[in-house]
Image 1: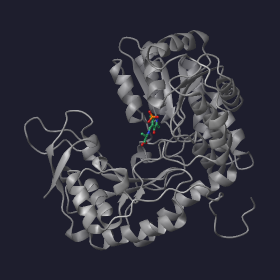
Image 2: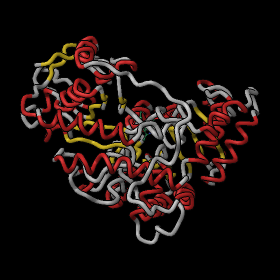
Image 3: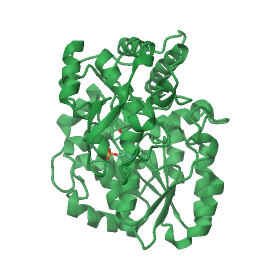
Length: 460
Ligand code: F0G
């Protein structure tokens, strides 16, 4: 589409609708109390606009719903598998295409197959599940971003790039203990920031030099390709598809949560070029996921994923996707709301520590903001700070705090419209106007690991 007008519109019209959970402020106050002030414990119908995650929460196209109907449920050798295989091979050039039920299943199988004593896995940043799977198999998961990229206010185009100096040092230091390098595109932990083609090429070269496999965590590959097209010199004349094709062909394989840029509600992929490793992974997959031609998915899921992967590189869609995140960011920026810069591909991250300077990290400013936004507007974001990544002090003092106190407003794909975003901006403006009176929380009950998902809180 040629954009002659200023407004980049949603490049779709709506064919099926789902009512939102409309509640009153009083009802939301009760709901939050019943949820022990943890938004993860709210129920779907209590939420108006759900920005908890972009994972599996998007809308499928009419073509994808049609794909469900023609899915082939043959146990072994389903036609839908062969279609998915062909689509993924054309996109990625990968030899072995192994479906899994979601991204972390692919990660689990991969790490179980490459694990070795004293394993070390360098990355730009491991996503939580990648790190957890690496550590589960005894590995050390290294995050190697450039120092500048760790400053939330540094407005740089490719904050997801792996620091090549740190990578060389890690490969030199750990030698044979490194089975692979994993680069996450876009870098979710770092705010959905992209990795440049130049950095991917240089990482590939360095991995070759050290004889180490170069893998991608490709959950948001299409958003990464679009940023490369928009921001990287000499890439603007290529199509997003061509860019994605090159990104994948630089690597020896990838894991993918298809719940993001696969445009489906469930699904994942483990794709590899190495015959022996792929064979080993398929054997392991049978233990947990099912048969290698369906990997824990129904035939119809494979079919919908094949269609989703064909659709996601549509440039009108990608332009709209980036514009809708930018739209929210620019308006909040005008209001003076402190945020991570620049906005990422799937979310806007609010700097809750700067939003609520009166609330110390161990009283959870991110949770205070998430809860206030829910009360004010029925909007659910997610705390990415000390609740999620901090730990209890064994001596009973303050928590060991996370490096940043963020709230992620994550956008499901093709799901909400501009008026939903305008409403969100109004709600946040109200929360921001009353920021001086906000108070923190204390934890009344928590599990030793992954406490964010289940902890109970009390307002101070
Ligand atoms: N890799 C990245 C970069 C992710 O963002 C996720 C999930 C996974 C792997 C795991 O995939 O959920 O299909 O098992 N991210 C979600 C999120 C949960 O909210 O950011 P999965």
